[in-house]
Image (cartoon, rainbow, N blue to C red; front, side, top):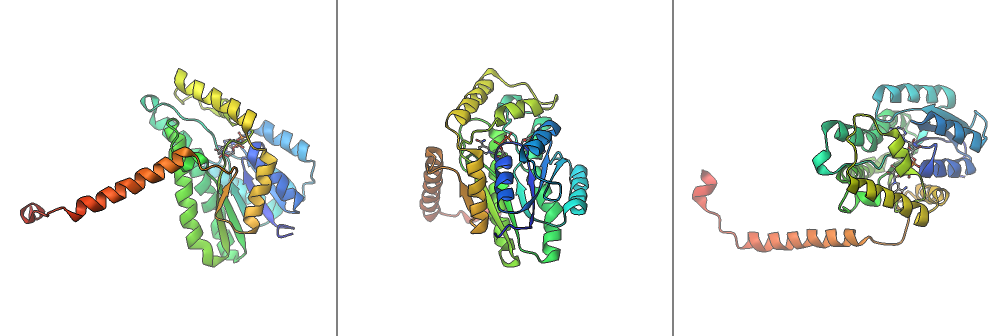
Length: 287
Ligand code: NAI
């Protein structure tokens, strides 16, 4: 297969969607470095996958921490070789209501969901480019990176940013043999809500009753109606094979996305009509 013998680095690969991607990679003959912040989850994943150390290794890493990232990358290079497949997947679903936000909360949420992605790119891309090797990067955004849902503004901010980053990087790398795809999961059956609660730093503001309820509901929806993480892993690798720009997990344009696009189109039409009739005041322009 296209993946045989190549080395993949998967962040947040010890559980959920990341673990689904790892399984799909191993099935196709790739070698895999799993990086995750949870030592327990890494140990469980290692036991579960039962694959020899020449093909699979686990590394403890907080993707928000650049020093740790550099150390992990050096170990991977030593243990397994050059990474040519990068999956920036680690993420948390934390947010707060605007009234409770703090700078610490911004830094923590953006540090994982956004900086975690570009820390990965900045760590591995120069090597991929220098080697002139064929490579692929998959960044995990969310449907929440395409439309607002009326809660979780920090989560949305981080996930929208991952979309812009991925689309523009794809265009810039297209001629250099490195593909970039962005993953927009809809609901997927994982414990992200619970895992996020466990990983929350002490400095994070406590959730309001409203946000707690939103997160509880999200947890139920994901587990009752979410797609299978292993199925999503297969979808992701199919997209890598065909160098698809976008990877979705369900056939539904969310109503919010339609409404947002219509509202933007309306603002554009309105602007054109307004500016067509706008009479500049030369005196004001010179002032
Ligand atoms: P998960 O909680 O099952 O897996 C995420 C993994 O990332 C965990 O093993 C966790 O320990 C690890 N992680 C968290 N913070 C980390 C850090 N700072 N450094 C390294 N590893 C860290 O969650 P899931 O659902 O698999 O999420 C994966 C990605 O998919 C996330 O980016 C999430 O935002 C995104 N996503 C998930 C959706 C869902 O319905 N499950 C929907 C939309 C997006």
